[in-house]
Image 1 (spheres, helix red, strand yellow):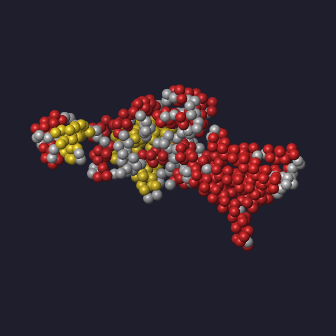
Image 2: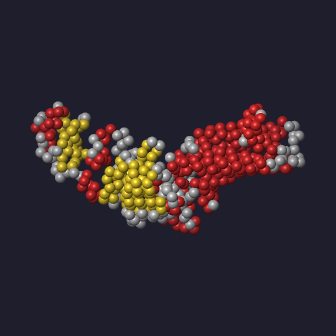
Length: 239
Length: 315
C-alpha cells in the first residue's frame, strides 16, 4: 500500500510538472466547454441537465484523453531507462501497476472536476436536474477509469508512446462501437456484442440510472486490463 | 554475497548466457569483462531481478533472485547501463524518490541524500533539474541512487561508458572508495578499466566464462608477448622476410598497411628493426608498440582465429 501510494503520488506529480499535461488538460477543457455551449444552443436552452452532450461527444472525448494521459505511463519509463529502476526496486509488479493507474486516475479526476463549473453555471442561471448530472459524472468516472486501464495496458506492451496511444485508441474504439455492430446484427450474437460494449453501459448513467450491472461491468473491465498489464510485465521478465 | 550457478538465459532462440557460474565474496570488487553482446548486461539483469533466468540460479545476499527476488532486491544497489533518470525533476527529488522506492525510512532520507551527494560530489547540483546535467554528472546521480539505501551489494553495468577521461578517473576513485564498504560487481568491455579497480575478473565471451582469476595472475598469462606495429615503404613480402630474421622476433604478419611484429615481453627489438630496415634501403614511416586489445586477449584465451570477423566487437 505504501509503495502503491509512492508510485501514485510520483505519477500525479509528474503530470503536474509536465507542460504536456497542462496542454492536454487545457484542450480537454476547451473541448468540453465548446460541447457544453453547442449543446445548450442546440437544445434552445430547454434541457435541464448537461447529459445530452455527455452522451454524444463527452464520453468519446474523455476516452480519447484518457488514452493520451495513459500512453506515457510505462512506455516513457522504458524509453528513459527508469523502468529498470522500478522493476529492480523491492516493489511488487502489482504495486507498480496500481500506483500508475491511481496516479493517472487522479489526473483524470482533476480534469473532470474542472468541468464541474458547467453545472454550476446552469445552477446560477436556472434550475438544473441534479440527479442525472451526478450519475452522469459517475458514469464518466467509471468510463475514464476503464479507459485508463486499457491505456496502461497498451503502454506496457511498447516503449513508444505514440504506438501506445494508437493501440489504446484502437481498443477503446472497438469496445465502444462494437455495440452498434451488435445492434445491427441482432440475435444472440448481437446481444453478446452489445453487452461487451462500453457505450451501451455508459448511456444508462446519463439518464439518471445507477445500473449496478454497468458498474460491475466497468470495474471488471478495469480489473481485467490491470491484470493483463501485470501479466505483460511478468512476461517481459521471462522473455 | 553473489553466487551464480549454471545460469542460462535464452532470448527466444538466441542463447545469451550459457551456463555460467561464479562467486563474489563479501567485500570483493569483481569485474565482469567481455565484448559487447557477451552476456554481461543479461547476467546483471538476472542478478538484480529485472529478468528471470531460463535455467540455473542466482543468489544475492543469500536470496534466490528467481524465488525470493523481492527480499534480494533490498540488498542491491543497481546502476543499469542506461542510467535510469527522470529528466524533469531535480537531483534532490529524484534521490528522495529513489530512497523511498528502496524502502528507506522517510525520516532518514534527508540525511542519506546529504551523505550520497557528498560522496558523489554533487553538492552544487542538488537543486538542478537532471535534464540540464551533463552525462558525467548524470552518471554520478546514477551512482548516488544506487547507494542511497546503503546496499550490501552494488551492481554497476558499464559505469564509465560515455563519460570523459577526467570523469572516468573520478568514477574509478569513487568505485574504489565504495569498495571498502560494499561488495561490487562491475561490468566493462575495457580491460585496463577493470584491472585498475577490481580484485578479480571474470571474462565472458559469447555467454560463456573463458577465464576467471585475480588481476595479477591474469596479467602474467596475458603478458607473454608484445606487438610492435611498423609502417615501412618497401616491397611487402621482402620486408616481411627481412623482419623475420631480426633477432628476438617470434612472428611477423602483414595487415595493410602495417607489419605487425611480435616478440617476448622482456625484449625491446625496436632499434634492431630500425637498423634492419634502413640497411635494406627501405624507409621506416612509423613504429610503435600495440597495446593488447580485448580481441587479442580473447584470441589468447579462446584460441579463436577468426575473432576479427566478429561483428559484435567494438574497441
